[in-house]
Structures are given as C-alpha cells and as structure tokens.
Length: 221
Image 1 (cartoon, one colour):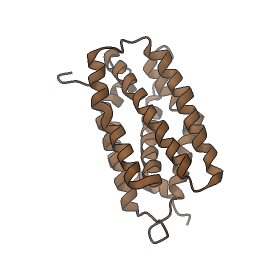
Image 2: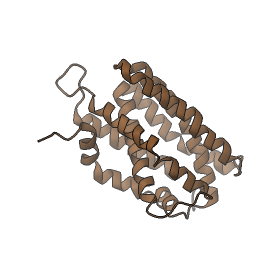
Image 3: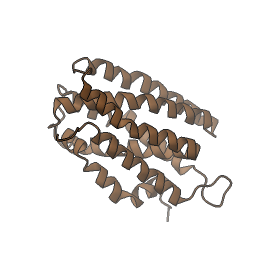
C-alpha cells in the first residue's frame, strides 16, 4: 500500500480546522459575490501589504533551500509575487478609495498575519516558512476552487482575484509547496521535525489568516 504523502496527511489531520477557516465571513461573502466594495477595498490594501511579506519569506526559502534544483522555484515565486500579483493590485486599487482612515485601520489590524509568519520563520526557519505558505495557499486554492461552483464574472474585481487562484500556475505552486513539505526530514532523523510541529504551524497559520481576513470588518459592520 502506498503511503500518503506527508503534505496530504497534514491537510487530512487538520481538515476540520481548515473547513472552519473556509467558513470565514470574508471567504463566504467573496465566494457568493456579495462582498461590499468598501470591504473589498480594505482587503486589497491588506493583501497587497502581505504580499510584501510573502516576498521576504520566499527570499528566505530561496536562501535556505537545501536542494539546489529547487532554488529556481523560489526565484520564480518571488517573480510572480512582484509581477503578476502586485500588477493586479496596481491595476485594481486605483478604482477604489485607498486613502481612507478605515483602510489604514484595517491595514493596522491585519499586521497580525505578517507578525505571525515572520515570527514563525524566526523560530522555525525553513520548516516554518514552507508549512505556513503551504497552509495559506491550500486555504486559497480550496476556497477559490469552491467559489467557481458559480460562474465567475470577469467584470467583478473580486471574481478576478478568485480566478487568479485557480489557474494551473497557482495549482502547481500549491503542489510544489506540498512537495517541499513531503521532503522535510522526519522526526528521528538529523534536523527532523515531528508531525505535531507541522500541525501546530499549519493550524497557527490558519488562525492568523482568519484574523487577517476579519481585519476588513470594523466594529459594528
């Protein structure tokens, strides 16, 4: 019997917690095309800020990657973040009021995600960076894939964002992150990491993502 890949086992063990994140208010509203423009404007601002953190984390994984053959993947990830994703924000944010105090408050509230990720990289190094990004990208792939159960409207900016996260390129990125998780040394080997540590990182990232997404909703909204 073929053993289940470590990345798939990680998702399976934490499926209930992942489903909880998939029921987050932001994900539900974006999936159903009922997200208010003011909330999407705030999301654009906080997500653009986090992409800057993701670039730094990807730079670290490039530096720390133990397999030279995989270095190019991290370089390509950095290129995509600095290119496709930031290009998206530049094009779309111009259509929204991004100078309001409410947006600045949302950005401040959203810093919990960057703080978590950078703290995890500081504490857990390459393992923390890889597992955190795998958790985040798995969450986005699953919710955006489910959102395509309805026809996406290319005229809606939120739907265009969803479409970016179901492309073959994004699916390949998630698979690549899963492969990096699969290659992490297991407990009992030099530099090995236990499944319990992977679970803690995976769930910690989902919790941070929840707080990040909730940052767009200010008191009473």
